Length: 383
Image (cartoon, rainbow, N blue to C red; front, side):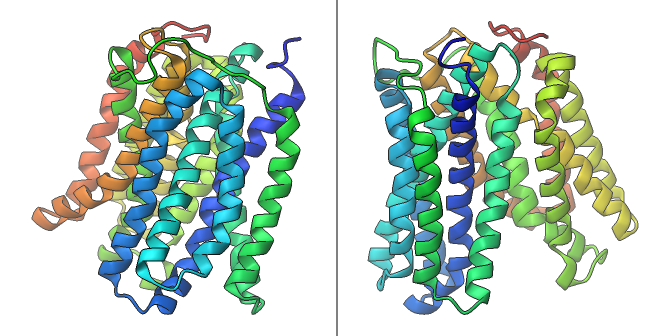
């Protein structure tokens, strides 16, 4: 058994995904406290949050190159430990400038671990010669739920934001300590140039990643407005749809490896995207809330394993070094989350929000049509 195909190595990979999801989710409940402490309006807060995204994208571009040369373990550790150390500073920053810098650093740590852990996951999955990527990504979702739940619980118990962030940071450090000795010492070490422009099949994978991440971002930012605007649910219940979407996506990823092992990457992309498109049809045509909620469930279940398959194919293709390919599709996906929801808002303003959601379904159709091309990129998975 190779070092990459050991239960301990798979555990370390899952812990890395867990920490990444936990870390970013810990920040969400702290946003209102930061806004109140700084006394800024929504516009300034939006610019500050953009600093987090910029830091992530910059780090993602650099991490692909560094992982290709030095391996992913040191970058996973720096990213995970960085999240833990920077999180408390987000509760102390007293000016917009200091918070912006802290968010940039926090985003850089997140972007670093995000790319490096996926590169690590590609190597671990390759050594196992069976699908594992969906399960890894499921742990990111579990971490997100746990991070928001723990931080919210601490704040509800009247524990201060700084003290709460210290507790969450300690949990992340303990988890990274468990992962540290079990991570592969060197992964996907590549010779050659540190920067390569995406080309070949990687361009298609990046475009599809941007599309699928855009769908996830749209569910978060616009799903509640869609059902509330159509009068299907009252304002207080608007978040129910995204909750069901998240549950379906997490459950789909927890069982996704077994499904992919049985039907292969091509059919996973094909039927997953078709199921998500059907969910959009149900959601947009729903006359009552219950049917609309079923649409959210279908979208979450259908989209759950699209991204894991895209990451697997990025590791399997030979058009460019795997580490750089993973970084490219991670960056493209993050760009979809950052830019996409704003684009949906523009379209909704010009036409309507339901039309914007219909266009999302059409974009998912590109995933359906591309399933064969993606699955035919070189690799060991069944197609």
